[in-house]
Length: 97
Image (cartoon, rainbow, N blue to C red; front, side, top):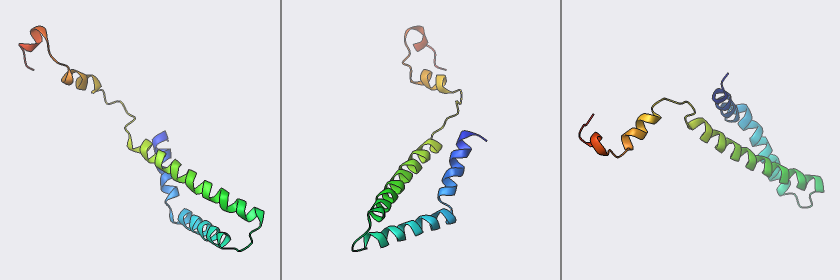
């Protein structure tokens, strides 16, 4: 399996119903712990780490989307594009392709 396919599969899994349900449960837990009047230190730690997890996961997803949208295959036309933008000089100005 290619690296790009692995990235796409991971992105699909992140956006699957089961994963969204799991993160929905995590958000509910965070909300409950944030609304608690006198949270235990471990509950404060859970909220802090959960927010870090969600933030890092969003950053990872964004980076992977950029990676999957860029073309990583050489098409062989890069030299052609360079020549197209090259200003002609000398006898090459007499001949148009």
